[in-house]
Image 1 (cartoon, one colour):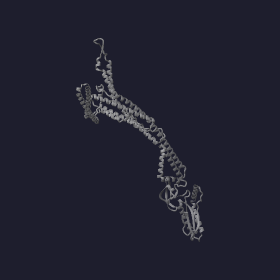
Image 2: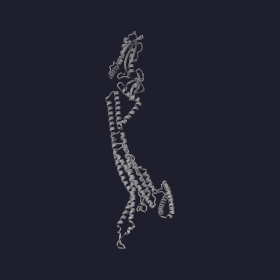
Image 3: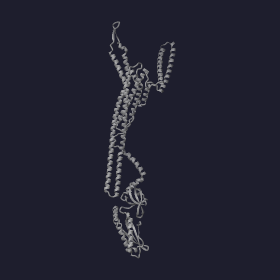
Image 4: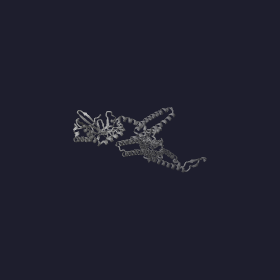
Length: 633
């Protein structure tokens, strides 16, 4: 702690009187709080990703902030000592001194201090007298000495009580500012134990180009947050620099005033006339007489100015050093921010490049899918094969798009594999029915599968397939008896997994085999010319069959090519059988499923016309013919 001589008024008293001590104390505390905020902000880790040189910038910022804080406390303490010395000389009260009861406590404390000094001086004098007096005076001197000791003990007790009251009330006069400064200093342990904050390890940016979009985005926002924090640090540093300059301005004026006064006194001393020489009464010795100006004591004034200059310089020089340190800190922060900005630009370019590559890859995939769709529509005529190719296109485009997105967003594929393993296990358990349906889809669209337009029977439901999906297929339900089936107006939905259910068989008409067998049964009399009647009936059936024979034979050829197996061509079969007391003529003929009712109607009309117009047939037929679907087996 620097001290200023309090015995004599100083030449610097006049400049100090021009300063508002109350506002000065507030400015000093505000400056210390600002420098503490800067130090804590610099010590707080503000960067998580970056290059190794960023750690150097951060350590340098902490070091410079700590140095600026140390210099600020040195200047504040020196200025507080200067203000305290000035108050002791002039009786003025500082910015932090209270009024009323607080002022009275200060006066009591100062009075007790003076009384204690007087008692100690008298005790010292009595001790000397006791040592030098004769034996008959020792008793009185010792009695006085004992009284002074008791008075000293009383004053010490009063001082202790007053100090405790002052400690609670905060009535310290100019020392209140010193106490506040000490409190702020104790709030920063780094100033006392010289410990250094541990820098947080930074995540390197070396792998940014190979990182996923998610990782690069996180790093980008981290660097953006770092730039924002550095901007705040620069603004705090600039505000602190302005405060330090404002604090230094009045002290600098005092220093300049002291320098001017010292220069004037020095000039006067150098311009004083030399001492005159006179002979002594004996005439053999010269006596120097001091000049008249020397009686005013310029040397003593210079000594006062020197003392005050040292005291004021103790407060001014740390502020000047602090300003230089803050300028260095600003340059360091600007360099740090430039480095972070370069890193931010690099990560941003890498992210944009990765997004561009992903966009180009997805565009190529979708363009190839569109070309696939157009080529399929143009060159594939078969509806079933076209649907299979389009479904394959959607699957491939989806898989490739998912791969591009995964490789674009994900960085750590080891973690992804582990995560995907757990996800796959959960999906396999929770979605086993859906997965089974997806697996069955590839069997359904296979060679012996079903396609749109097929007529199938499943779970006692017969219908035409109207759509085949990835997990289910849809049937237009048909109602009726035998082959006389018509749409019921309802759509039946079945899961593809029904293909693997043993208790639910699925029947499907094979390609080219979309025909059914019907039977014509005619009862004939034994005593008639049944031969002529059967020939005419069989001829009529053949005439009806000739109308769609080509379609049946073409479908049969297609079935042979599809199955790669030879099969007998469907044709009309006839039998003549005994049936009780009559003969039964049985004719079995193929017909298209979708034209079964039409064919049966044509055959019925032809047979009625035959029975009515041909006598041989009319006399041979016992009853009306019966047309029915062939019995299974």
